[in-house]
Length: 180
Image (cartoon, rainbow, N blue to C red; front, side, top):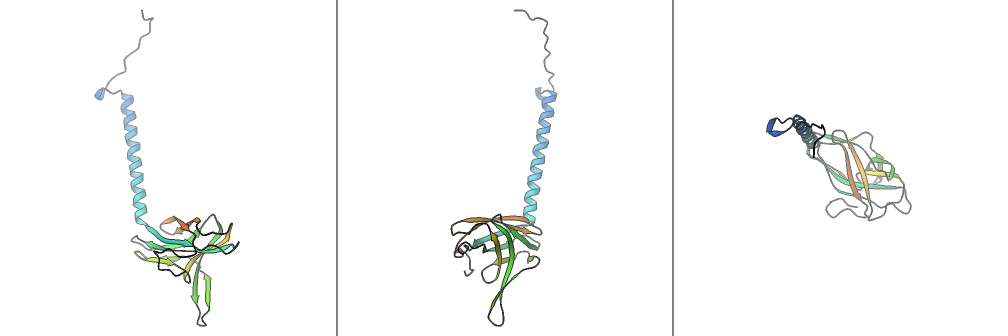
């Protein structure tokens, strides 16, 4: 069989028998891999700079068709710098407020909204507990029932947003010292 005037030129081979195009493709792939590794490294470094750890989270079930509840947890600042708990939110409630309960001289428990942020010094923990500082979940869409979970997003000045899975329970987790 004869070839009918079709002439194909062989691709030009260069370094290690690779074409120039293939060398460029490999170079671009290496640069993209390096950029991805750098991005991951910087992300891990940033997370280490503002480390917040949350333990013993729980929320009380709401009463009946109640539209309010409270959430508790221990927030540890594992970074080398102080941070501020500025706010919290959940899709299940219209608002989440930081509250603090105190006992008056007359023996009456008062609960007040905390204005501003709550500081958490480097290496210290903030304990949100019944009869103390806690998160009030206001305007709940549906009643909270024991056994459910809700997602709370805590906003920190340095650490940014931290999502916490909060189980709903009538009692504090066994690992916490908070009294329900």
